[in-house]
Amino acid sequence: MLRLSISGTRLSSQRFFTTTTPRMVSQIASAADFRSKIGSGLVLVEFFATWCGPCKMIAPVLENFEKQYTNVSFYKVDIEQVAEIASEFAVSAVPTIILFKEGEQVDVVKGANAAKVKQILDARQ
Image 1 (tube, rainbow, N blue to C red):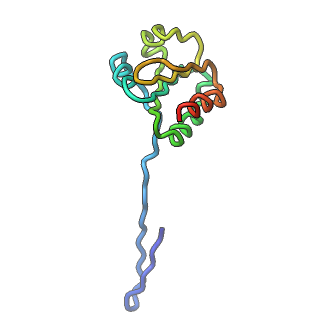
Image 2: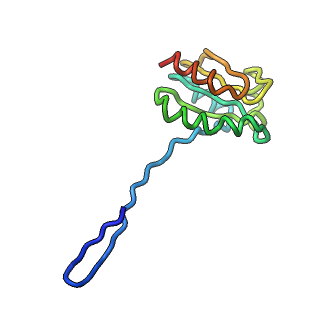
Image 3: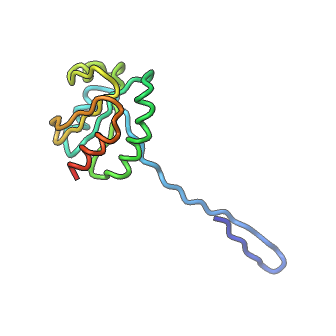
């Protein structure tokens, strides 16, 4: 927003900016971090790989869902960095999206199926 004011014969302008911090899907970096994050409430975790094309395609969709479903915490896990967690949950394809409730797995979506992710989130509203 630009505000102009005239004082006597002098013209001055000031710029005012408002900023908001966008929500971003946070990345989990360790098994301990993973366990602490999924422990309470509804938590959606995307298991991904940096080389995975479908993972890159669904990432902005999940960021949008994070804004819509404020009762759900969103995280992502790089299967190559936190391989023990990927193995524990038998992640055999990426992306694999798992919904947890109070630390328990309640739903799984294998592949970049945004409609299915929306369906499982809507079922928990």
